[in-house]
Image 1 (cartoon, rainbow, N blue to C red):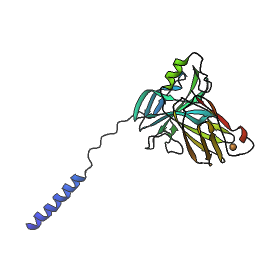
Image 2 (image 1 turned 60 degrees about the horizontal axis):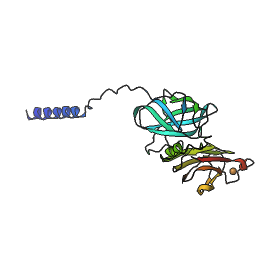
Image 3 (image 1 turned 135 degrees about the vertical axis):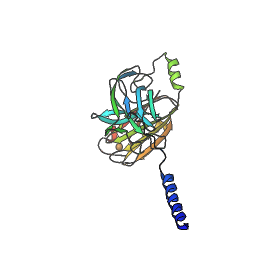
Image 4 (image 1 turned 180 degrees about the vertical axis):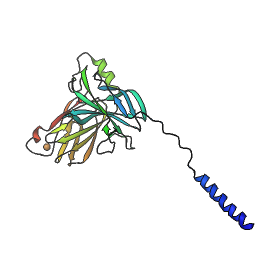
Length: 256
Ligand SMILES: [Cu+2]
């Protein structure tokens, strides 16, 4: 009899253990629509591109690329996204032209809340094996960044634009013998962060009007920071001899 009680006790213990290990009820995962991005070709002003619809399954970014050889090229702007859907997301861009084709692409944030790729692992979002991106065009712009000239007698507008200063992060590539983008447009008062990567040999990045001079070792991303505290058009250039085209390796910073 004692033995039977003992056996029963053991069996109950097993039963209790089995119950305890039963996984808590798993909710069927809501079948979310996959990540997507919808953007129309558009006329833009104030350097703002509007993305009609986005859907992303983790926090990330909508990133605007230039189109180079029919593929995504340099990044000219990004905006952070929360997990989920969003509509009419505005992205500040710099260095585009009228009629230019651009690509809007989704990237995930790697957890540091700062966009960077590939030096930061904010990788493109893929769905069904494809990068989630869409090409669109700037149909016309009131004031393309690369050609903006302050209109005389339009000071009010200029001042309103200047009021919204912020940190502007721009990814730039240095290679024989150009900087991409070659024209960077910011607003007076902006804190500018340039993430510059040389993709071939050692170059330099010199912007003497803002006291900036850095060496760019190949394959490394160097961040250059300055405050655009004066309006005007300034030249930046390669300061490390890099071959026959070195003297022409320059670009323009426009501070509006
Ligand atoms: Cu050079």
